[in-house]
Amino acid sequence: MCGIIGYIGTKEASPILLSGLKRMEYRGYDSYGFCFLNDGKASLFKRVGKIDNTEKEFLGKDFVGQIGIGHSRWATTGLVTQENAHPHCDCKKEIFVVHNGIVENYKELKAKLIKEGHIFESETDTEVIAHLIEKYYVNNLEGAVGKALRDIRGTYGLAVISTKDPEKIVAARMSSPLIIGVGVDEFLVASDPSAIITRTRQIINLDDGEIAILKKDGFCILKEEKEAQKNIETIDWDIEQAEKGGYEHFMLKEIMEEPSVIEDAMRGRLLEDEGLVKLGGLESVQDQLRKIDNITLIGCGTAHYAAKIGEYMLEEYANIPTLTDIGSEFRYRKPIVNKSTAAIFVSQSGETADTLAALREMKAKGVLTLGVTNVVGSSQSRETDAGVYTRSGPEIAVASTKAFLGQLTILSLITIYLGRQRDMSIVTGKRIISELMKIPELAREILKQKNEIKKIAEKYKNCRDFWFIGRKYNYPIALEGALKLKEVSYVHAEGLAGGELKHGPLALIDENCPTIAICPTDSVYEKMISNIEEIKARKGKIIAIATVGNEEIEKIADDVIYIPKTLEMLTPILSVIPLHLFAYYFADSLDRDIDKPKNLAKSVTVE
Ligand code: F6R
Image (cartoon, rainbow, N blue to C red; front, top):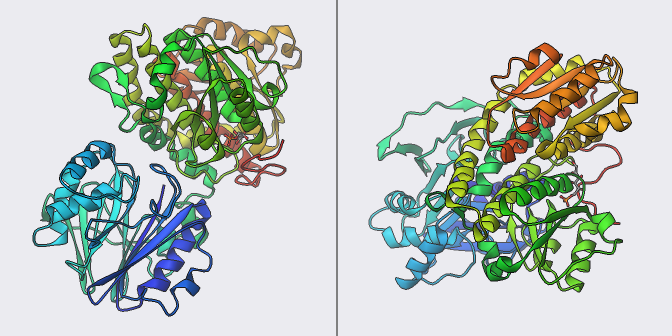
């Protein structure tokens, strides 16, 4: 989510780090920073905002040295402030760390380190890494980094430098991308190839658990304290492709990130043995939440569909009467609320004008307001009483994909949270958590079918009308599938609750109008089959999204995309993935401007 770069070599580090970080800026970072080492002395520079006139600020100052690290931040823990920008350092300002990832147990570690006398300057999880390295430092930096990482639970891609051991950069990786660039008389480390591609195309991909030590005259990579043999690969992408992680479009890159988005949303929040979830952002209102007896969920577009699925989850598992509305409708209705209402606002950007207007309306009525938001420090996250961040990382493509998966994951966590405050049993809590933990792997299974889904999308590329049908948890997925298809391909598509077909839309079904039927093996499966038969009887083509093992469906559907079995309430998290891929490949076959569809903006900040 954040951008990392490090340089050690025979050139001045500042222009190299600066241009590397600038090349990662397309992701919309909120703050940045550098640290350079020169003659054993460190110079630290941090700013909020975009990297604009930094060159001028560097000129004539002390920011010199042939070793340095840089970071562009996309806030996850702690607001967008200069103190929270990386690099972070230890008490004596001798050890400097840039980090991408999440330290799940940072609160416990921080409390322990404070008791031991460490003084913290930021709200971030990263700062504990610097203090742990300080605590364990004996002879060399890599030894202390190795020990510090043993205390950490979570994910990291990190680069560390120190005035105590000033001739090296130590880098380490755990479930967060990190590459080493091998240049001529110089070595680089980066989270993203786009940061270093102009200096070298020779790279080594670090694997989980590996620690790299970069010096001016060479490097070594350690795994479990032994030297690891690694292959040097050559990147053959151009800069534009490198920004997209080698994918042709951000939309596809972001769809491919969906499994890790689900993981990141859950990280550190599941208490498996107790069937509970820990949501730090709701702690301040936990007693108020015990007393609420109705919920209103609000969002726009894709976020509204996530909210609608949240409604089904909350009613079924938390036993709380719940309503969902669209921001633009809600703001002009006469909402009936009371002291026991909680309003949950779902938004990727946290800046959607209609959602914010609904939030302000609810606040004016004295209702408890909660946010499910991706962007830390956004208007929504500042104005709600409490909330949970989705941690989906920057979403660049205008069409929302991975953020939707983050929203669904958080809504399922909120369901467990509120359910366990009420009459959800420990057994049910544990069951949902254990199924949730399997979801990222199951999502990866679906993504492996991307080439088959591409073929299906291309097969229907001449169709100009599509229906999407689903019921119960997958009704909002039908709406999302249709929205995604129309916005990126400009082809007409409509989502519908399966039961509504016979009330009118059946009149439009014919052999030129295919229907995507989301029909996993769940409590409404038989009903979906009846709807599919109604369509088949009118010569409509069917693309079914069905559960693995359901061979019967092949007899009635023209094409089938299989998804793995999971708990009914979690099926939308899986069933939407093939629909995101279908929309992407369909639009690509029509050569559309996928990442920036016409007439649309990423964040709708006007009414
Ligand atoms: C659809 C899409 C939009 C957004 C909507 C809300 O792909 O991106 O429908 O979901 O504009 O935006 P946020 O979530 O930022 O409030």
